[in-house]
Image 1 (cartoon, rainbow, N blue to C red):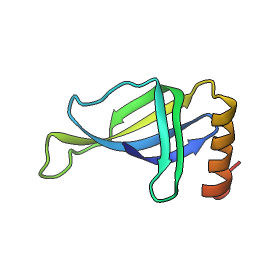
Image 2: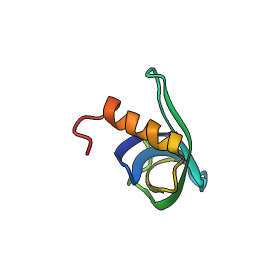
Image 3: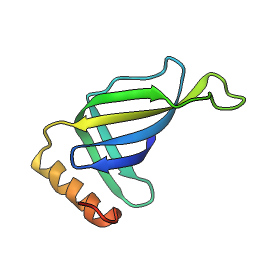
Image 4: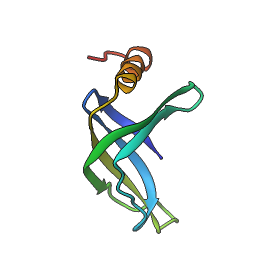
Length: 95
């Protein structure tokens, strides 16, 4: 689970915390907004980058903050519709 930092129709970047060696490669992600009722499951994707963002979190040395970028794969019509709804409803200046 992570926090979206950048998103476009082609993919997204997010930051997350994991234990060292705890990363998992995934071919699909879910986008949801807690408290907003928005949920877009099983978006096909491929990881473009995933890197450690610097110093380990203080006093919890087995955890690290990372940034990951994914490129969306072929979306279903329903996924495309919900992604457009996400842009029009929750983002400002979406292009």
